[in-house]
Amino acid sequence: MPGLSARSPARTPSPLAGALVQRLVPIAGVVLVAAAYLIQVRSPLRLHFDAVVLLRMADSFRAGRGFSPPELNSPHPIGFPALVALLQALHVASAPVLVLVNDAAVAIGLVCSFHYLRSGLFAGTHEAPVHLSKRTRWVICLLTATSWVLFKHAVIPITDVVYFGVSSLTLLVLVRAWQRPPEGRPTSAVGPFAWVALGSVLAACSILTRTVGITLLPAVGWAALGQGGPSAVFEYFRRRRALLAMLLLSALVLAVPAVIAVAHNKYVWDFATRYSSAGSRSLAGVLQQTFLDRLADMGEIVLNVSSQAFSPVAQSFFPAHAALASTALSGALLLAGLVGYVLIGLGFWAARRTLSPVAVYFLAYTALLLIWPYRDPRFHLPCLPLIFGTAALGLMSVHQKRARAALWVYVAGFLLLGCGAVVHTTRLTFAGDRFADSYSDRYADSYKAAYGLPHDDSKVDPEAVRLLREY
Image (cartoon, rainbow, N blue to C red; front, side, top):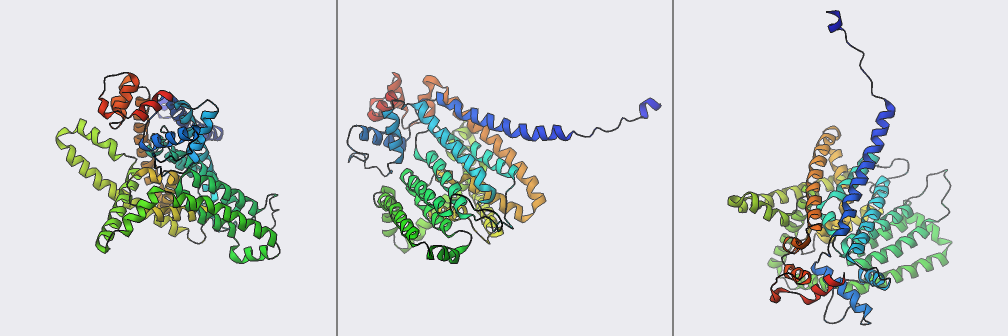
């Protein structure tokens, strides 16, 4: 029949509708992620060994005893405790406010990462830069925000998340200092070395937040050189000796907190003792174990799976094969970590002609972690956008068309696992009296004591109970 065989003309999608979808999807993603973070302000104070020490440092300062009384023997710099002491002075120090501080640091870190990844990771010149597209940068920030490493620790009052925000702002300023306008474009009213000075101040703040901020110092030096290289810097300062003297004085001032932080850091001394006391064979063993630890840490980031959280899940769903499942996960983490480092290496190789301060910082940070003899995925937290960005460049350098399809499959799986981390963390936030049994074995009885529940007095930490009641 003619009526059945006739076909209506195919409808072409409206450009306006496509543009609207492209704008609404990122907005919806930002709203959902922001809501997931902000809802955690309802969480009780989440204790962690470092969190207890940091909050006690702030209390010690408020009592007039300084940030590092002898009984604490704290390895932490004073930046975060000083921030908590300020909140205490303003009478707003509480568990919800500490979560909001971390949320603000996450927002600053993601916004700065989105902008410096535009041309700051590997930007050869203004004429031929290596860019990550706006969509790719948005996906990188989404992966960072939904990583269990960041989401979990954003609810805990420790230094990692605040350092992520401050160091990301530092990198954005250093990239601005490093870039020079192309020929024919007017120079900025703020000179490049003013940006370097601002970046130096922010780097000092980063060092005072976490000692690992010393890895920003090579990036500061690289930003000072600029894209013109050493010869351009020499020519610039040849007629500006007063400015050179001022900058050298600023560098000396910047070095002071770095030297003090390193000299008084317990982890640094433990690190030095471990390596200096090891013989040739045991030194090789330490280095080998450290390398395997870094692979496992990277694997947890790449797969977006926490090995610590996986064990009870395996015990619940596969009680007869829990040990086998844990062994299989350990192997998968090592393999995924190796793939992650290979892609990062390919990313550096694909855009190796000129490294920006961001890439210099990433190299310095990674080099330090490769010899740092401790196992914890959160060590990588400040570099999550750099890990994903560099790996994306490495993947696209292999085969761009196939890489795009593989990348979207990976992103979907990563986000799905990230939703699991969000659900788990949110469930703990609203657990009520069950929070004590669900959150931490180490502080379970301390929570029960603070909540007035039956507990074992021998396992109660009095300082933890005091902090839970105070915050």
